[in-house]
Length: 334
Ligand code: UDP
Ligand code: MG
Image (cartoon, rainbow, N blue to C red):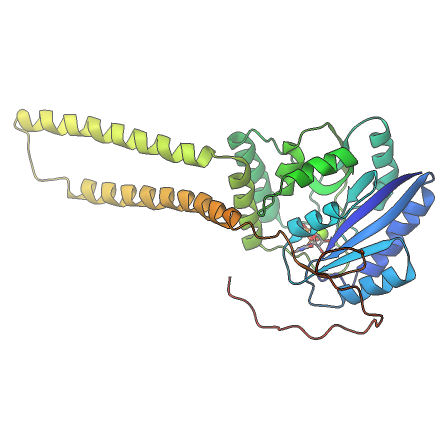
């Protein structure tokens, strides 16, 4: 019998996790010939998420879980799930039931047709803030123009992959991960299955405009160096324009048309060039920051608890299902 691991990143999902398990499990039970298991990854939740995971793991042998020492982000949670998966196929999905498990049969059919990946693609963004949809569309346009790694518009992190594709993904060990790009970068053929957006029933989205902007910058800088080339090109054209202007002034002076007017021109040019220089340094800074972070070779995540035997430095669950000790609630400066 083939095995399928379901990797689920969870951050403050106490309201939905039990329901998620029930609904998803009932779909797994309907599918014959496959052995499903869950890898729930608690991304440093501050609510009872990890307690629920312990309870689920105690009650159901097919549930494995990993709990992070703090919030490392969804990308790190997916990585942890994938790197601890052992199944022939791996499904990645959200905990909030926005990724309908009713697509499992189509996923499995697709993979049995010989695709290495079958992924869900939203056809609508119903229920989402207009500004978010608009910015998201812009992001895909800009990113696809700049990078050779073409992202599929509407793609979500809900997909099934074969073992060999998962192993390829794990070979990309960068700390600052942008999974949408990584999934595309590793290649293999992907079958896209469209679905209608489902609104989150309980809990709240963990993203805000600021974190989405950060995500977009990560996306572009991870897979494209076009902004750096753009900066060089811009510098070149400004120099060229300045040179033409210089010739113009020399000729004007030689012809005796030298007046002291032009104060506004100078101010405008200084401001314009100053702005461009700041902007360029900012772009360079983004890349240097990434080199700096990668050069530290920090682990992608740190787990503090798991029921997966053999995870290094990780404690096995206590038998109690009581709430974990209250965490230090002070916000860490970023
Ligand atoms: N998530 C996570 N770590 C984070 C933020 C989110 O593991 O720092 C998980 C979250 O629990 C959910 C999934 O990632 O299972 C998608 O998050 P969310 O529903 O907030 O995103 P949206 O659906 O609004 O894009
Ligand atoms: Mg969601």
